[in-house]
Length: 332
Image 1 (cartoon, one colour):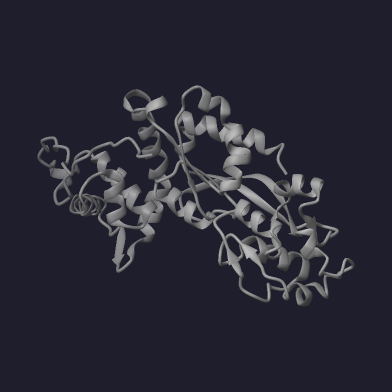
Image 2: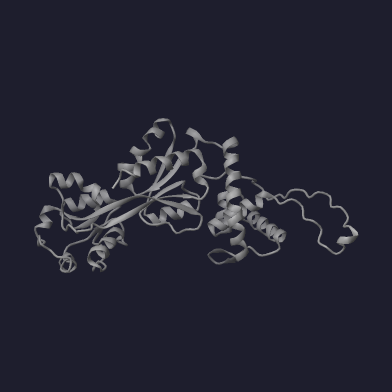
C-alpha cells in the first residue's frame, strides 16, 4: 500500500537569511539551509525501486519532479547518487552509504504520519501475495480473526519471484514465498519447512516398479508425463536434485495454474508430479493418490514471510505478520 507522503511536490524549503561570514571564515562555503525531507523520501524510493519512473509512480508525482529532487539532493551533498542507464538507475557508493542511514528515519517518519493522518483499518486493505494453495488452506484461516474484525484483504496469486518483485516495488505488503528473498530493502523470516512428495494416481503407479531405486528412478520416471504449475518446474526440480542429484530429464508436459489443478490432473492419471505433502493427506487416506517413493529424508522447502523493511511497524501488517509467524510454527 502506498506510503504516507512527506511531500507531493518538488518544492524546496525556504532558506534562512545567511549572516555575513566572519573575518576568520573568509573564503569558506556559506552554511547550507535545512534539508527538504521530501528529497530523502524520493531518494529512498529511487534507491529501493532502482528506477526514477517507478519512484514517481510510488510517490504520485511526475518523473521530472523526481529527477529535480534527486538533482537538488546531489547538489546539497556534493556527490552523484545515481547512474542512470537504459533499464533503470544504479546507486553510487555514496548512495549506498546514505541509504543505510536514511531508510530507517524515512520509514519511521512515514509511520508517524500514517499513525496520525493515514488511512488504516477497514478502508485500507492489507495486500498479501502467496501461492494459491497456501492462501486457501493456511493463510485465510490464520487471518480469520482479523478479517472478522473487518480488516480488508486483497490477495495476489503468483510465483514467488513475481510476488517478491511486487513487494519490492511497494505493490504488496506481505509475501509468503517458496524461495529466500534476495532483493534489497526486503526483510524475511523463515515461516515453516514444507515437505514435498512425488505422487501419482494408483493407475499410473501400477506402471512403475514398486521397488524403484533412486538410481533407476530418473530413467523410469522420464517415460511418464510431468504435470507442473510452472514451466520452470520449481518444486519438481528441487525434488529431483534432492533425491536423484540430477535435474528432470524433460520439460513439463502439462502446465496448469496451481497445485490444486496439478492434483486434479494427476488424479485423472495424466502424469506424475511433486506437491506439498500436506495437500495430499486426504488423497493418501482414501487412495486417490499414492507416493511413488519414500526417501529416507523427504525433500523440504523452507517458506519465507517477507515484508519491505520498515513496513512491519504498520499496525495491520504487524498484526498479520505476527499471526502468520505464530501459525507457521504448527505447519509442516
